[in-house]
Length: 129
Image (tube, rainbow, N blue to C red; front, top):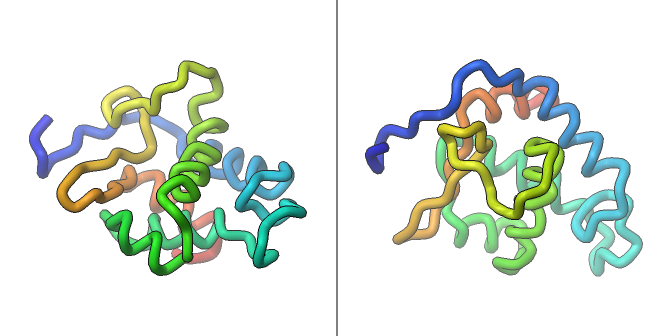
C-alpha cells in the first residue's frame, strides 16, 4: 500500500455500521457523548468531532484538537468509541483499511484519513450530505 493510495476493503455495508455507531454514542454514558454527566462543559463532543472528521478526506490531529478543544487522549477516546461498534469483536487493535478499518492515521503531520464510503454513510445518516 503506498502513502497516497489506500486500499479500503470493498463490500462493507457502512450504512448499517454507521447507524450502530451513532446509536452506541447516543445511548451510552461515554466520556464525550451526549449522555455523559461528567462532561465538563456539558457538550457532546463525539458526534461533532466525527462530523468534522468526515467532512473531508483527511484532517490533522492539531485541527481536531483546536476545533473541538480536545486533548490527544480525548480524540483517541472518541475514535475508540466509533471503532468498538464497527469491529464488533475485541482485539485491541484498530483494523487496517484492507481488513475493514474505518480510518487510518499517518504521521508528520499526524493526520487521520477516513474510508470514503464510511464518510458518505456518516454524512447521510447525520443529514450532512
